Image (tube, rainbow, N blue to C red; front, side):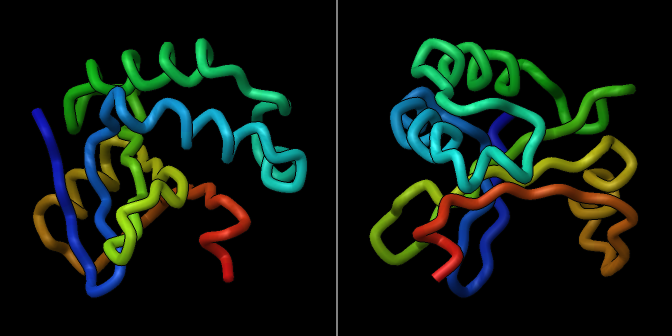
Length: 112
């Protein structure tokens, strides 16, 4: 199931195989990785395995966090990833204004 949530500037969407190079690059940045749960460098093989794994997760699956790509509308570049546990994604997908827990990671260029 492909998901797509849009704001004025961003698109949160299901990861796609075309995201692998940009995803590996942002996760390989030591300044980004130092605040996250992975180590840099992050290979394209690791990124491809991540994308394959997160594409299999169904929204609301018990015990599974849903990971979405964060894409900048202007230019279409991958800015990072957003993650949320099942209970939060159910709230987001039901258009609730309440968000109990979520996580995100952004490339340095997206933080400017």
